[in-house]
Length: 167
Image 1: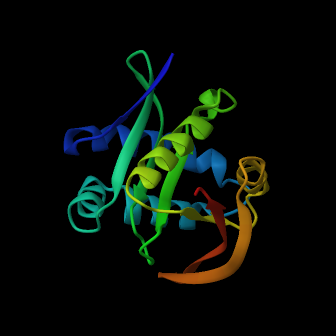
Image 2: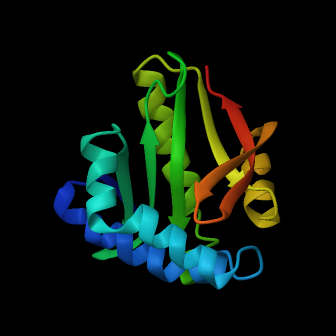
């Protein structure tokens, strides 16, 4: 059985471990190894994760099966708009994909967002990550717009911003 719970700061190591196992496979055919390393260091060092929670208002949820952590997501209520929740991150271990964990995490964020008065979810996804885009489309998201974000060191995030109406 899959259980989902909010993290505390001591759980951020689990988030980091899932990211380190997931990213190289997820982005192997999309990003260069140099960009994968850069982004993992930028976003998933424990200090960076703590900053996301303590200073940026991100809330991490972890999905467990028994004692094993299989995936996570991070969201922010009222992001860029009074009525929108942003999913900043959602990753499932490669061996756990296809079990409905991503869908359960998004459903949990929908419940939390609605409870807090938000009417939409949105997220960024790499425009070349077709599997992720198709997953979000199946859940009812639509492609809202494209954006390119300079993340430094000569790298960019070339994304589709997807949105889901939840209320």
